[in-house]
Image (tube, rainbow, N blue to C red; front, side):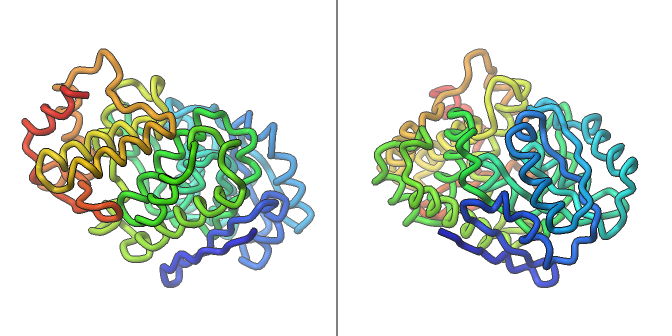
Length: 363
């Protein structure tokens, strides 16, 4: 099974290649793209141990000169200080303007390597090779790159489109179950905001909490439909001037929860799941969508083994205060992505604070 999804952005267009074995085809996939000879492979120690040598072998066989750089694993290390490690390696290995950074890892590696590529020599090539479900369906596609500020997620960043996204579903075999479940949060998100057929397919699946429970052909379908959804949205709105904001469904409250728990208690997809539950409940409160749809979404999130309640100890006032620093705030008003039907959402800055407080207290 092999699929290629185009992301149509004029001169910045690229392809998402989805196929088992793509890790070992990385060199041949990159060769036609005129990416220069020098490559810096950025990963974390665990991913590099599993897949680094295979990626390097494929690149070197294709004629690339490869150096590597490993970053500490975890959202708490997604900082400007850690970014310096990539810059140091880029300098040491004398990357040039036609050189390429290859991001081999999950969302943290992809975001940081992408931001380094966006800013080194004012912008060099980046190729995304995602190794987590969340990165495959979301973080690796669309060109959002960045690092966290102590008071907010991804506040420091740039749009920098990859030259290629190479997805190999087989690398998910080493993904921890918790991370697989976290990726499912983003898959469910696409079903709610864009692809009602994907949502229905997920409802018909017996289990979504373990990769072993999902057949290979179904996993391929999940990856392709999710990537297609993101490609559709990004092609219409590259830099989030309007439509692309819908990709942040569940992220408004989710990011606040992540930040308040220090990026250590929850992984990103778990926070997004909590945020989707909250956004859905807000939509019910505002009579935007029926409680039946809210129930269906809740059942899918629970089927994926994801949390649906706020972590204990969080103060509602702290969450509401932190919402004001969200990147989606416009003219001082928090913008929420709210569902109106399965496959359709709206962007609203008219959510009363009392409604937010009510929903969060019940969670």
